[in-house]
Image (cartoon, rainbow, N blue to C red; front, side):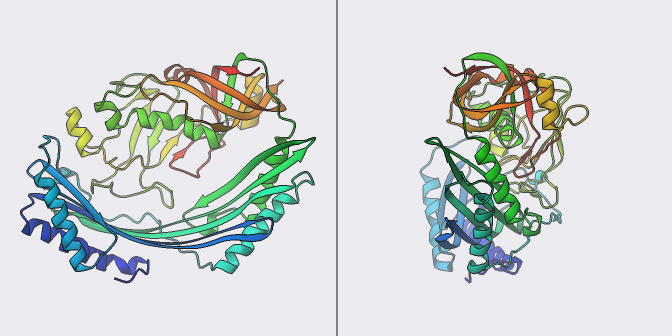
Length: 448
């Protein structure tokens, strides 16, 4: 099969998937599901004006899962030829015959499967070759280095463009495919002063390359952020309010998603175990899942099992509405799939009253810590204990006073979520969680 990636490949992939399903049925499988994909991409990186890498990506894959009653087997291949597909199906069937029965195994409920295709505007190919991509990366890096003479080194600027086609089908009659793109531009710079070196970055990512900020803009922000870090110091250990900038607030909210996933719930490995229907945020907090936003990076009309996705109020007036479930976890919990096999589809976090800017939140905070980067993995998903290394700025009189580094913030996520003081209107839309700055009432800030 040709690896050219565009919507015109969907019929051929559908034929491969349908053939694999027929073969699984012929070999005696009671149920089967197959996904096939083609991917292509270009990425380039430039450092100090010189080309470091130019990479082309061309990948393809096929995944087969079969069920013999409630025994499950899976196999995969990167070869989409007819012989390889038949061999992969046979391997999955052989595995299934030797596995233990699982009463929750099986395909999604047919009544939940998506039936109508949705126009989500996910496919925007970027007609950019390596020479143009290198030129764009050089422009980005040069703009950043021109911000200040103290920016004397660089980790480089990068341009990436990806396009992929996927088709999923199962023995309940579901067979659908789509084509989607993702493009990015980033820059990482280093600045030095008095023997001290600091590093910072900026980036953009979008489905449509026309939605990316200009290379000069991205480079300039990276340069300004890097210079602002010079003179960073530690502070004495204290208790203080903490404001997470939008680019890191997304990760802070993201711990909620892990805690309410079906897998964490049925394994009893969540600090929000059984919390559906409970208030876990202040009453003004609202969070919405919106899977069908045009051009959004986490939009989809169906999850990885073919279940139709739908709008949902995940947190209403601070109360958790329910969990994120695929078919297996739903059965383990005695519930119904929410169309979240494979993850969350665009979480929108509403700002608090008045949609305050970050500057307004700083004034409201008065004295505390503005976090602009998180480091380490010190989060316990079972207990909710949270401890991360951070860099950012110490705030006095409602404005950044000086940069800080080599400090740690700590607390428990259940308490921190309940203690949210405000959410800003400075929403970062560069991911599956869209939120503004998040102000937490108080955390331990550990320094000297």
